[in-house]
Amino acid sequence: MDKVMIFSGNANPKLAKDIAAKLKTKLASIFVSRFSEGEVRVKVNDNVRGKDVFIIQPTCPPVNDNLMELLIMIDALKRASAWRITAVMPYYGYARQDRKDQPRVPITAKLVANLLTVSGANRILTMDLHAGQIQGFFDIPLDHLFAVNVFVDYFENKKKLKNIVVVAPDVGGIKMARAYAKRLGATLAILDKRRISPESTEVMHLLGDVDAKTAIIVDDLVATGGSLIEAAAALHSRGVKEIYAAITHGVLSGDAISKIEKSFLKELLITDTIPLPSSAKIKKIKVLSVAELLAEAIKRIRTEQSISCLFEE
Image 1 (cartoon, rainbow, N blue to C red):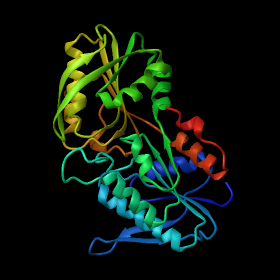
Image 2 (cartoon, rainbow, N blue to C red; image 1 turned 180 degrees about the horizontal axis):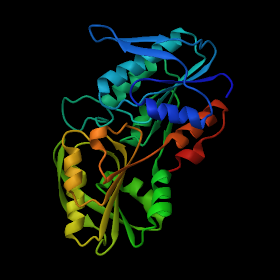
Image 3 (cartoon, rainbow, N blue to C red; image 1 turned 135 degrees about the horizontal axis):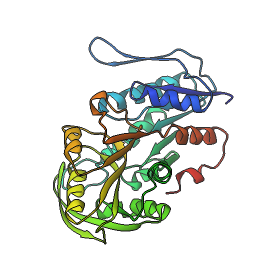
């Protein structure tokens, strides 16, 4: 593509290379390192004057490091006279604090939106935000993609499951679960849970018929795995035959891997929006690529085509 340049930070270089390969181009050269005291050091090695620039950088763990890298790369490219800078954030960190649900707490999702805008980003491309209203925190264009078709293709072509029930892990996930159920021709169930702490929940009620069915739990992210394991146990106790999980962002912090390995889950499907560490490569976890989806979105943004067909949930 003429006058387009793809850059990558240190957060997920493999995904960036895969996206560039899909676009039949090479990654542009940028130096991202650290000064001796830990400050982020950036130098753009290629001429970007008048170019349409895309930076592939999910703000995944270590979140603070990757976020600062992204902000500083944007600043460097802006000062180098790039025509347009699109921050491609497959995973949008700090998204879980998206409203004031308690006294004296921040709204970090809005703070990060402000930082990205002030740093010089002209556009944001992201995937499966933790809360849809985050799109409204930006005063610049934001394109919000969904991984639903990536997972649905896998289940239809690889697993060919029968008698499926799609399970929303909480009331907030009903819209996502409905999208999966519609595409898979499946029924829908909802787990009603009560949050004990920011990291743990307790399943209270199950709404819907799941007995002797194959369940697919869908969600936007899995962190410590507490909610997911609790949901799988609740479904198992109610007679579910097999339990799968399709979750876009595999944060997998703490002892999540050991929990998943011992759980009732048959398979956990995640995407490569966040790189999977070698310690997390177990048989129960399968990674699906979103490189083709992101590459198509970048191509359409560059050529000023509609991308509505890509982000319909």
